[in-house]
Image 1 (cartoon, rainbow, N blue to C red):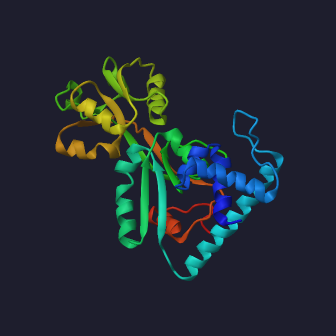
Image 2 (tube, helix red, strand yellow):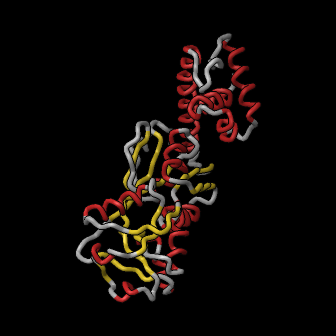
Length: 298
C-alpha cells in the first residue's frame, strides 16, 4: 500500500465523486475505481457502499479514511520539515479566487512572490464565491480568496484587506459631474449588478434596502469585467469595488463616484483548510501577503 493509494481514496471520500478525485490526481475515473477496489482487496473489507445512489462509506471505509488522513498528514508534515531543513522553497501553490480579487488585488503580491521565489509555481483558478469554498473543503487548492467571507466548518477565514465600494457610470452620464453621490442620488437610475447570489450583490442590495430605495436592475453578470463593459457602453450604472476600476477611471472610460459622507467597505479574506500542512512555499506566500495563518507554525 502506497501513499498515493491513501491520497486517492481520501480525495474520493472528500469530493464524493470519482471524476473529481480523478481530476485531482491526474488519472482516469476508471483508475480511481480500480484503486478503491484494490484497497478493498488489500484490507479484505468493503469500503464503499455501492448499493446507495449517493456516495457513501461503509463503517470499515470510514475507519480506513480516518487512518488515511492521519497517514497523509504525517507524510506531508515530514516532507515540509525536510524541505525546511534543506531551506528549500519550491513546489506548486494552488489558489482559487473570485475574479475581482484575482485580477485586481492579487497580481502585485504574486509578482513579488515569484520574484523572490522563482522555483515555486503558482496556479490560479477563477471561480464563483461558493465554488471557492468547495475547492478548499475538497482540498482542490491550498488557498481561496473571497469577499464578504462566511464562517464555514473546517475552513479558517483570515482577514486580508478592505476595499471600498464606489459608483461607476459612463463619463457622459449626468451623475458623472457630481464627483460624489448619496445613495438617494441613485434613485431612478438603471442599475447593472452582479448575479443575485454573489456576496457583493447581496451587500449592495442591503445598502438599497437600508435607504428604502427601489432600483431597476437591467443587467446581471457573474464577474466584474462584464459589469464594467456594460457601464462603459452606457447601459446603466453600477456599484463596484474601488480596486477594480482605478485603471478605467484613469483612462477616462469610466467615471468613478465616491459616496458622500459615508464609506461602504468590502472585506476580503483568505481561506485555508483547517489542519492543512503548510509547505515552506505556502508559508512564504502567506508572509508575502502580510498575514499569519492560525496553523502556520505546523
